[in-house]
Length: 568
Image 1 (cartoon, rainbow, N blue to C red):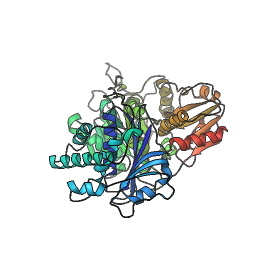
Image 2 (image 1 turned 90 degrees about the horizontal axis):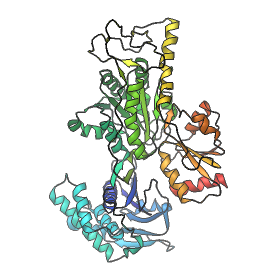
Image 3 (image 1 turned 180 degrees about the vertical axis):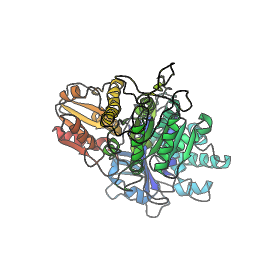
Image 4 (image 1 turned 90 degrees about the vertical axis):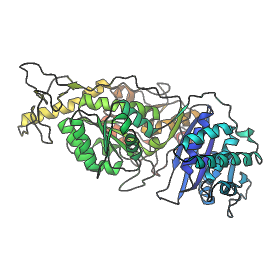
């Protein structure tokens, strides 16, 4: 495994360099994992892109960097704590205040990045491409692969710009070859030429399209905007209607309206936008209209840290809206699980006729994973029970049918008329204040969660079943937990209990709890929100917790050390 950090200031093309290197490594048959850290500024600020290259599938970030490509000295200095001893630093020889190690603890390569970049462009815009060329040499990636990947990445640019980037990359490659021996960093190629790059955002769009979502309304909010943009790009090809609403309240109500007509619909947002949507979440629950919401978390409260990651919205989402109504909450933990659960969410929403919220966060939405291709879903689309008229039978939209899936009609169906509104109602949908009917309608709605428990699969421990210690986690922390357990040797046995199904909890939750001896919770929030939810719904009270509120994801080595402290 080789860990690489590309760092510089906003506007220096750090994101582009990271994506190009990920593509190069994947093309050459290596597994990769990538994630960017950006500051909340349009130009300037320190941006980084970490890439892990491995011969095995990898799903987590490292706090021990092997190679740094530094396009700015300040960016390098702010990340020195991540560098391992003997880390190779490639920096711009043309920068007057470049970093000089006083302890000889790093290898330093002063590459004429600015000089080379200016040969092919009047400004320094190609510095990132020069640097990627140097990294390609170290990783034994051919110039031919570089040419192919640059063409693909810049296919919307002019031929002149593409050629300039290719020439800059080649010269960066040659300049590095004249200064360094690449054998130390060569990983043997896996010959896996069908590896693909996926981000959480991309697979969320892919799954929604395959689930036949035909309507999305959203108000862009970092870090959820990528999903909205991805769906909007597909609108012509996939016949999707995408609407940039004036605010989150309008967006969710538009999605509810579209879903009422029988169209599969969704909206996307982050925590602050979800706060505005909560009344409409209740409307979907009361009127029993299917709805899928993807909430991509970032640190709060208020504006918080817009470009960072967190898991602080679990309780907000579970408790969205006043009163009680069925609301399914899912939290996939890997890119592959995002693909699966977004597809499932549309089925769940239609079967139960209620809102379904998928909790992602910036870390899982914007991480990029190199893996084998995700095959198109073989699962069938389940639209739930749709009214079919039978002669002399009256359609009662909100009839309390024991142990049956709820039935809905679609606008225009003969004899299928009913009233859908936000008031408590009787079976036709007319408002009511009769105590017995109110109780009957509440029971009808809440029984849907029992139906959901019969639909979702049981959850299993990852690893041995009867371990001395159990890591409790949810959402995006799964990958780094698995990598941390692989990387460390612990004195006692450890397994993982990862929760995708947050509300309702898995149907076998009581049995799982009985097999936990020493729970250790890992969450990216301040309060241990899953810990509280489990204590409220089970007899599991977790004392040992590893929590992080910095807006940064966990790193493999740091997390392994923290887990070890609870076991020693």
